[in-house]
Length: 332
Image 1 (cartoon, rainbow, N blue to C red):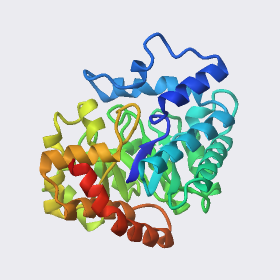
Image 2: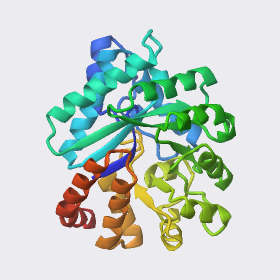
Image 3: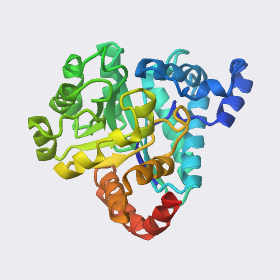
């Protein structure tokens, strides 16, 4: 019911695809809707990322970006979510002349419209820089995040194929993010190892997207614990990208033993055909999680979210009210 790692372009519904494609005269392909979900035999992260080509084709106007953001937020509310941080890369939506600032305003418009219809639900946006993006374009993303700080834009990220583009290349970008005092989360330690996570921490990350290959019982793990870094686990997508082989490989117990905070997230609801409920169900079945552990993971999501302290307290209160029902549902 809380998701801190959720990609907008990976979470369009089938109905979103159909509506936008018809409106804009764009073909969805002969194998729709199979082509919007990752195949079971997906060999790598790079192939997984190909599933974003079609949604990005449809998300090149302010109207469409607003529409899909509103649609996603309303679906989360209908599922019973109480909070989400939705991330996307503005630079990927400028193919028809929009600026990154205009792209972000469109997403904010859609989000604000949804929240007016979703009492008790809170959501914010995280802007992604891209590993394959140029430095100038990524610096523009940081600038937009700073311009819109104080709205529902609450942080920045670095996404993309980390094996091809190590975090060390992005020092200038995150030096600027730190100068602007922006919240930083970085995808790291999904396709590569612990060294990439340490570079992300050097770049100012307080949260790590995925991070399942942290060497927990090493100085790297000691640093993550000491700096109170939170790791955004996305189990199903990690299996699909072959970062992990099976749910038993999700290093929950190692992180718990070390005292490093983790959260459970969906990553891409449509591409991975999942949501937070499904993720917790998989982990409950695999690790026999008790209610205290499930509550702890959700509380980590609240405590490490990039929202205000006032909203965090409201979320803690709502979590206390809903945890029994949530735990009962994932145990079914």
